[in-house]
Length: 58
Image (tube, rainbow, N blue to C red; front, side):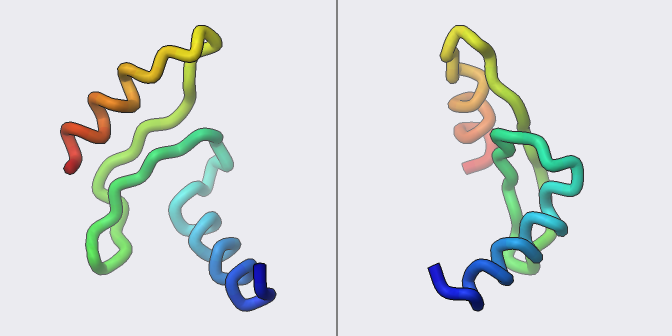
């Protein structure tokens, strides 16, 4: 990864993931505004909540 890409990624992280949570799914419009987000996961590996979030925001 180039330094330019690394710096860009860090700026996006600061803007969209201020709490530093992982994983974080964000829906962003064309102007870069976050419209919706979902964070966290279960220890069981269940991803149903994530899939519902993605379907809701497609």
